Length: 427
Ligand SMILES: Cc1ncc(COP(=O)(O)O)c(C=O)c1O
Image (cartoon, rainbow, N blue to C red; front, side):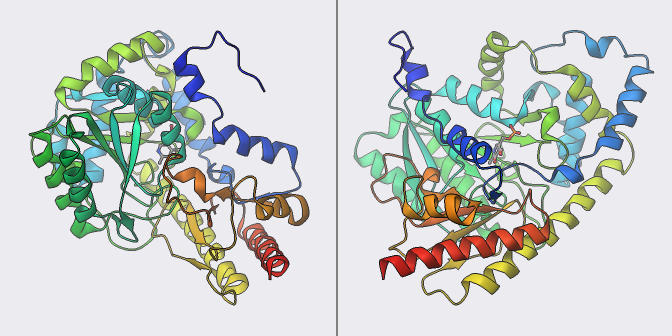
């Protein structure tokens, strides 16, 4: 499709988002099993809890206030409830004593990612990311003209030495003043299911704090999957290691643990960023849906209702994750050069294929998987900066969030068939 010449540079930079292509493939091939969709398990969504909450709210003293406009960062009462929730997640009652003024409620955490990026970046400014990372955020960075630089990453997440060396290299090149952000999906990340290991967390924060004395760098901790923990160690947030509270931005969402349809996210910002983010937000919507926020706050105030729900969905997702891993063992383990790891939480398994098998939208594998084998996955190359020459072309993101276990198994069987066919064709 040709672009209208009237489009702004910002709109032109935002063109061609991969998420749209993926959704199109899904819609055009309804008979495909989708291991691509990043949706949550619809059958586990808390309709009953939300119905009770809506009744309570609409029968209560605030029944009209919640239908009114609110304030840009969200009402103080809801921010205080979310702060208490964060104190529970952090297992630290002091968090509850933070000023609610540092909390900003957004339309999902995605909106915070966009607003913060708009607040911090001029074209050519630098964001350091894990490789691979959340591909929708790569699109946000591209839209503001950011230079996105991958930091060495392994099965324990972002590598502290790699981060230090990357910053040293940028310093030597004279690019240090342009470094604005280190972006990290700290728990069971999207796409690789990797968490930053416990023994790296404090180190990473210390590195950012030290360099922050010399350049305007901050750490953006995206904790979207934090509550989807199935096994493995409990991990402290990166944010908890930022003693001053001014170097790490923490963004959280109720999309994964409760309901993405409510679109409720919240973030803790350093003092100096609250105003700029709220000013940008005021231009956009002067406040996210107050009714959704009231529902979320009400649910959190109902004793153990929220915790019980999260426990239930963890149990369901653990079964699905295990179904995917068992199917990977069953169908892929006999193929040379194929590997994957067990994630301790989240919604994704990241699979590496032999070097010779490309996974991109235009690859023979993608076409064959969709058209002949009827299965969709997310091409791994979307999850690396598009300007990075070394980005691997043989990875896939496989989601276990949406399909029930028997369909996950069938999807994996079809995918293995597709890979085997391509390997045979190229032999
Ligand atoms: C890593 C990550 N961050 C942020 C988001 C945004 O989610 P939401 O806007 O629903 O909070 C997502 C959604 O999939 C995600 O995977």
